[in-house]
Image (tube, rainbow, N blue to C red; front, side):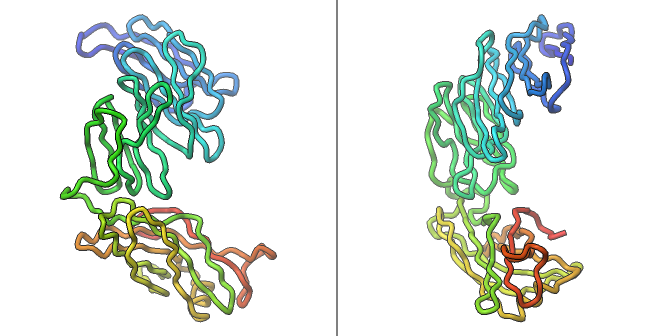
Length: 324
C-alpha cells in the first residue's frame, strides 16, 4: 500500500499489509486504515501515513462490513455479528479494544468525522440515516427514505442518495426531520414492497397478501397500483390488480383475490416468471418496483407443488425495472 500527501508533494510512504479482507482503504489527515485477515479473524489496522507506524491493530469479533477513519486516527467499524445483526464500534490510536455504540439490522457502510459516526439503519421497511456520538447517544439524521444507495458525512454535512434522488443537508446537532423537505424535485411517492410475504393457495380462498409502504409520502399519501404479473418473454399478463392509497408511516396488507383460473395460470406459467409490481400513480409516475414470486410446496409436503394441492407463493426482495 502506498500513502502520499498530494498537497505537500511529499515522498510516498509504502506500508506493508497482510492478507487483505476487502478492497477497502480509507484515509483522513495523517492516518490511513485497512483490514487484514489473520488467524481466521478480521483485523483492522490504522497507521500514520508519514512514518508507516501502526497506531491501532484491532481484532474483530465478526466479519468486517465497513470501516472509516477520521483526521485524528479514530476508526469506526461495522461488524456482522450474525446474518441479520451488525454492531458499530470505534477506537482511537493506542486505545485497547473497541467501544460499541450501536447495534441493529445490517447497517452496511459507516462514516466517522468530528467524533460522530453516521450510518444507515432500517425503520420498518424504510431506511434512515442516523448519527451517534462516541458515547453511543444516537438519533435520526434524516427522514425515512425508500432505500439509501450511498451516503457521505464530514461531521457537519450529510448527503445521501436513493435510487432516483440525491439529498444534502447540514447536521448541526443530533436532530431529526420527520418528512422530506417540501417543494423539492424528488418524488414523494416511491413505494416499497416488504419482502418475504406469503400467499395462501387454498382452493377455496386463493389470495395474495402484500405489505406496501411509502415512507417519503406527503400527508396526502401515495396512490399505488399493486399488480400480479406473469411474463412470457417481454410480454406481461396482469393476473390481478388493485389501486390503493398508502398513508405515510403505514405498512398496510393489500390483498389481491385470485380465481382458480388465476392460480392455474400461476402454477403453469412455465417458462415465464411471475412478479409483484408497485406502480406509483401520482403525476410523477415513478419507476415500477418489482419483486419475483416463487411457488413452494405446502409445509406438509415440500417435494413440489401439485395442481389442486395447497401451496404458497413467496415474494422476493429484488428491485428493478425488469423481471429478467
